[in-house]
Amino acid sequence: MSLFHLFLKSVFVDNMIFAYFLGMCSYLAVSKTVKTSAGLGLAVTFVLVVTVPVNYLINKYLLAPGALAWISPRLATLDLSFLTYILFIAIIAAIVQILEMVIETFTPSLYSALGIFLPLIAVNCAILGCSLFMQERGFANVGEAAVFGLGSGLGWLLAIVAIAAIREKLRYSKIPKGLQGIGISFIITGLMGIAFMAFMGIKL
Amino acid sequence: MNVKKLLIEPLRKTNPVTVLVLGICSCLAVTAQLKPALVMGASVTVVTAFSNLIISLLRKGIPSRIRIIVQLVVVATLVILIDQFLKAFAYDVSKQLSVYVGLIITNCIIMGRLEAFALSHGPIESFLDGVGNGLGYSLILVIVAFFRELLGSGTLLGYQVIPPSFYEAGYQNNGLMILPPMALIVIGVVLWINNSKTESK
Image (tube, rainbow over all chains, first blue to last red; front, side, top):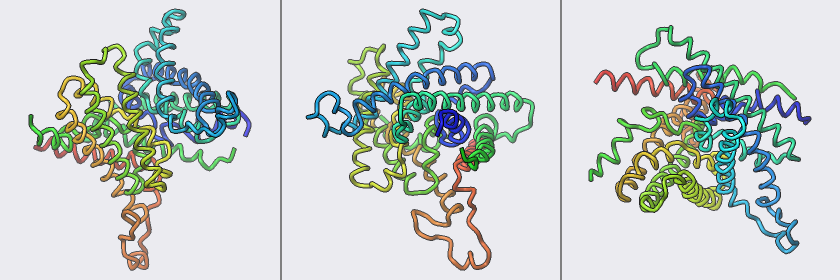
């Protein structure tokens, strides 16, 4: 599968929200206006592009069965994969923290746009989920992992901007009382998910 | 200390899923059948209860600047224990749940309870609060999974529930219910019913 195919597949077919429900909490909580949701979407994409390749390297040279062979042949039989969760989440939390500091120092304008969302992202399931999917699918090299991260991030951005636009319009519609707010957002997301399933038939 | 209040309130009145809208993230994907939903609910209950207990015991020693990292490490350790346990004793289910076991770490219910409750309450209360919230979460998972499995495949926990004579008379399983987007629509309807009931009181 070429990189471009992988990219398209991770944006549309394996969309983080519509196919896997990852990152639903912030997706529902922040999608009230298009502007803020675009900011959060960008921050998520940004963090995914950095964390997925880093976690790929961690997995390849530290966690996978026999991965430690590059240190010494005696370690080749070691399997550290049970440490996956703790290492991945620690890496993600650390990278988010570092990114926040770097962005704040070098590009204050970007920081003021993304700033408030960055701390939220460490506990966004889409980030950890993307790294775990990366591990499960076994990509061939760092490039593929990075493209997968970029595609998933953009897919997430697309989904949150789309629902924010719909919710902005929803303010003018008459919704049954018990369904207002979160209830109708769930149902709309479900319907959007059904629409996105059309992409599943596409063979890439 | 009111044990009953801590355990019962999260089931309905302050249900983490329907009222606070936390923790829907990773877990709707496991509700196509009842069995993985039950296992997932039980795992989340155990993790919430014990992480609440541990953080509550440590709460005076954790500097507040690094508390998120400390919480993540405690939760991740508990999730690793659950993951290894499932792999050893319920391998099929652990394959079905795949990455979603790992995603318990980032389940907002757990972080939410740690931040909102465990950091300011004693260990026993925190433990009970964790159990209550875990059960409230499991309740919603089980309701959604019940309808999806019953209508989608005509079975419950893998046993045929809808009698064969129905199929002979022309009844068909609703294949749409097994697809992931239906989980969202079912939970939307659950929310709707729940909201209208609370309002009418």
